[in-house]
Image (cartoon, rainbow, N blue to C red; front, side, top):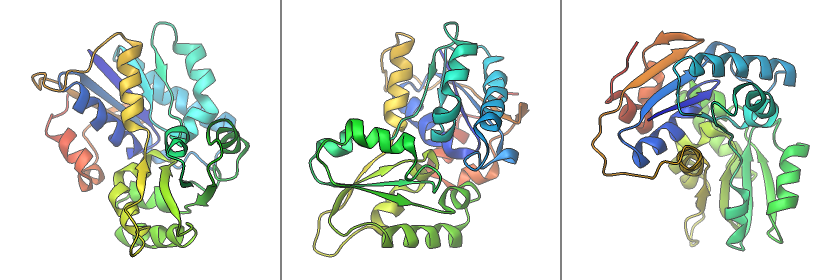
Length: 261
């Protein structure tokens, strides 16, 4: 079994780690193009072209499924990706986990990139899935970039700014960018309020990993013998896992697999 994941940068690490937890025996292909990130400010046409290039590089490794581990690419390029690659290659997009967060009934904050915050796409998800929950959209300028480069000062500044915009009564935070899942516990700490329970965090990595297995008719087997390989593509070129990935537990876990060229 081989699962490919694509993103502009290292945001795919969380979903890749989730796949490994469910199927330690699955071969992984990580395809990204960090030289072109961030994709958010680019035109829909540019995002689509870049996403297709990254996806084609992954598809050349003949995976059984492709996870689009990027909210921006899922919004702007998923239709084009599926039109080109399916049905031969199932394509699984990433959607912010608004529905399960709102189902708990408390106030919800959605942390997302500035362009996604307030967008028709996100407002549509809130309308369709938030029900009666009070939802606050929180823009997080600079957070994805800071995570991409493991910029500790930038991460702390972006976390503090977003936390200041998060209402104190929020009980759940939706991580609306895959990069944010790499600093999930730091987000939890940033929104912690004295005398209140810890805020629940809702990411997408586990859900998209499970959906990828469902699409190919595979069952989770977390106790399977770890025998997987890892292929890394940067801008379509065979590479090693970027050093910056090792700043995060998800990246260090994947590095232990080793990579193949």
